[in-house]
Amino acid sequence: MKAFTYERASSPEQAAQMVARTPNAKFIAGGTNLLDLMKLEIETPTHLVDVNSLGLDRIEATPDGGLRIGGLVRNTDLAADLRIRRDYPVLSHALLAGASGQLRNAATTGGNLLQRTRCPYFYDTNMPCNKRTPGSGCGAIGGVTRQHAVIGHSDACIATNPSDMAVALRVLDAVVETVQGDGKTRTIPIAEFHRLPGGTPNVETVLAASEMITGVVLPKPLGGVQLYRKVRDRASYAFALVSVAAVIRKDGGSRVALGGVAHRPWRVEAADARLADGARATMAELLADARPQPENAFKVTLAERTLAAVLAQARI
Amino acid sequence: MARVSLQVNGQAHSVDLDTRTTLLDALREYLKLTGTKKGCDHGQCGACTVMIDGRRINSCLTLAVMNEGRRITTIEGLGTPEAMHPMQAAFVKHDGYQCGYCTPGQICSAVAMLDEVKAGVPSHVTADLLAAPDLTPAELRERMSGNICRCAAYSNIVDAITEVAGGTG
Image (cartoon, rainbow over all chains, first blue to last red; front, side, top):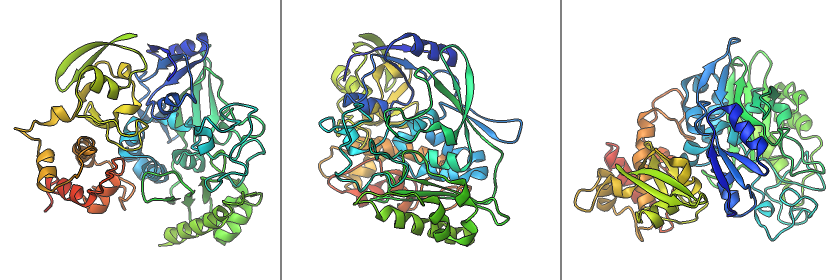
């Protein structure tokens, strides 16, 4: 691990200022992804700003009937919150489908949104990777591609976003709240938060370097049957091959998003309207532009079958 | 370097550490509490599981300096060979290990996991998110999936935890 200096922030504005004024600085919260990557020298910050004591660990009601989740609410606490379990069960299910009990106890809401890909070529520093070293090429294309993206990718990068939580937030139309070094705050719809790789896969979100996630706002509850189904290589503690987050409502207004297939949670609003016509019709819209790799074409079929299972479960 | 105050098993320690030192390395190399094990060092195996303020975490994925003032409990703080914690005694009784390397992490994880169940934290296999979780073997296996046992003593580990949780074991 490269050497770094360390300081602790006491307010969100101060944390953003600390990162803004120090070159190559990063925020650290749970640290479960960042420290792992620092050990491998994939992340090499020279200064860490600890944001764990900022008081952003509460879940509060918003005036329009939704919830504001503090950026530092731990994944376990979010999944276990009674309001989330009752009114946003797809979010609880998604969180509980990810990682292990130990990791969920440490990982934060903001950190989960910022976790890096699990592409093995990103992790292997002997391999080229445009995400890790811009311009070096992509080791995954033409390599072992079973886990990779089938849609929205580019000639520079075929990595997927590994978050389960983000897929549920996408189907719920959550809004990310941030603060920057100059004290300015802004809100970013989750649909615009993660970028597609294009020619700059190293830029994964629309956040500025010193911009910190202070919270995530959920709109008022959607009701319906809310399900998250994850298909993976073992029954627990593994990243998704494909996952489906769905809100199914008898009166219309159903929604679906996919995980494990793209560089960001994958949702196409036009596909939502096809849910009443079944999994095949929905996928024809949702994955119309899919361009799988030789080894992961199965994901397109698997996504359709997983959605079919979700729709069957929603009818029970 | 940084001077770090750590509260481990009820005792205060003050050590000068490189900021890079993980909590795991601080416990093992500086405080000589070698019960906590280093397996993968990447949060994948659970051998380094300790409790911070009563919650289980991977001590390899947190910096010592981030845990100043927190209440840290390691396997040494749960019990001693003469006065074992009920979970330790149950692991012995049910032969919940073979080589023993993952055992301190398994036991710390299991103790904190039962507290999570008491607090009503659901799991991936909890059918009804609004009902109190039932401690079935499927629930225990899912909740303990962050602790890998290469000797595969899993069925005996499930028996040991079930006994402590008040089941039949």
